[in-house]
Amino acid sequence: MRQAAEAGGFRLRKHQRLKLGRDFLRLRNEGGRVAQGCLIVNWLPRPEGQRSRIAVVAGRKLGRATVRNRARRLLREVFRLHQWDLAPPVDLVLVARPSIVDKGYGDVEADFLLAMRRAGLLKEQRQQLESPLAKAQDISQSPPVS
Image (tube, rainbow, N blue to C red; front, side, top):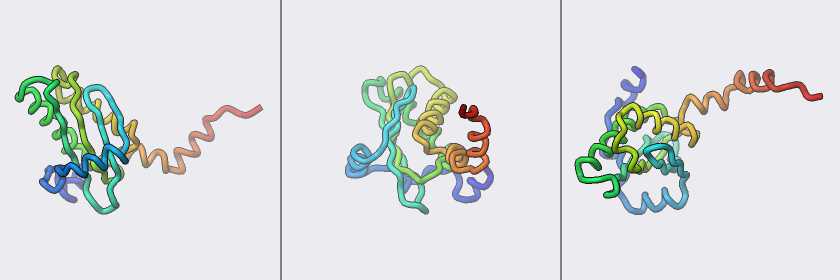
C-alpha cells in the first residue's frame, strides 16, 4: 500500500471522473457488465499508462437525496481505496442497487471486490492466472488419465 500512496496516492481527482455522455454510451455498448450484490459494474479497458476513471450512479429508486448521496459516497470510497488493486486501467461505472441502502462499508467493499474478481480486473487474480507456478500446481493436482 505504501508504494501506491507514493506513486500517486489514494486521492480521487477530477480527471479520474467520467462525465461525458459519449463515454457512458461507449462503455455501455462496448464494455463488460457484472451484477454483484448491491451494485452493478460496467467497465471498459483503457490504454496502458493511464489511470482508471469512475462514475457512480444512484437512481431515485434508492430513496431520498440523503440515501442516494450515502450510496454514492460508499461506492466512491471503495473505489478510492482499491483503485491500485485493479490490474489494467479501466473506465468504471458503478450503479447502486436498492439493496445498498441497508449495507455498511464492509458489505459494499466485499461486493465490489467480488465483482472485480468475477470481471477479472484485480491484480492478484491476473498474477495467479499468468504465474507459471500456478499452472504447474494445476497440472500436478489434476487426476491421472487412465
